[in-house]
Amino acid sequence: KELGLFGATIGEEYGGLGLSASLYARIVTMVSEVWMSLTGIFNSHLIMCAAIERFGTDEQKERFLPRCASGELRGALALTEPNCGTDLQAIRTKAVRDGDDYVINGTKTWISNGIEGGCVALLLKTDTEVMPRHKGMSLFIAEKGPGFTVSRKLEKLGYKGIDSAELIFQDYRISADNLLGGKEGRGFHHTVGGLELGRINVAARGVGIANAAMKASVQYSQIRETMGKPICEHQAIQLKLGDMATRCEAARLLVEQAAHAYDRGDRCDMEAGMAKLFASEAALENSIEAMRIHGAYGYSKELPIERYYRDAPLMCIGEGTNEMQRIIISKQLVARNPA
Image (cartoon, rainbow, N blue to C red; front, side):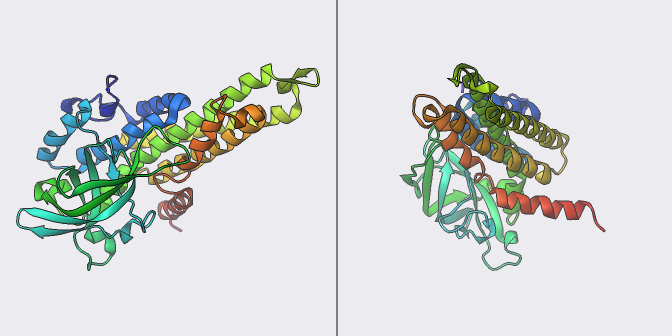
């Protein structure tokens, strides 16, 4: 909060730092090398803020963004439901218009910042009959209040520095003024737009973990000796280090490319997907190789290697699974290169 990271990408006119996605990604990478969970706290928050800044009404921007930039109001992104993850169009949480308000009922799960955060960007159905289904989806900025409860904290393998919660909405009443952009049926578009920045963040986190695992392995391999010499002089270890370093650099460049596209205002779902896919897999592979290089110490609590190993798999799942990223990339390749 003191560093201003809750307002990292929020415009200066709203009290934020106004950082480019490129600079933001570099900060995320640096923080993730030390403690990846910390970046999740402001990632979910800033995805919500990006949606407000890009798609919100002037009144919504003035009402929410200054409080978000200062850290007074911490946000989250509430998309996933107990029976719905990647297929967002299958969500069941719904809002029914009642005068100047909407009444919301439903459940959201695996919501980062759900406990500590004060509000969420809430994706739901305002029309359950319209086809295609995404035209019935809307996004609300929902602050905690009567009818909005945290039902439980979800325990995880890793990523323990940030809470993950299940949220219950039971006859939760919200003003129509909190409908993002003031129009129904635009929620899916608003959400996908916000996820571009989210995937760049996840990719940058992947680079951070991959870097940390590689750097730790380089250092340890010079200290640990077998057969009378440091293990970095054994070809088997050299092959691992070479691959680890190459993955780090390739992932970094993909993140940089995606962030630059985002900064230009270009559509970058393919670029963000490529970066997220490759960097998260690099983090997973490097953490496993680091554990092998460190042997028993890598598997123990003596060193942070086991934390990299526990944190890395989430990057392959969060903000859209890597399988979904491959599909997005493929579809965009065809769309951008018609026969």
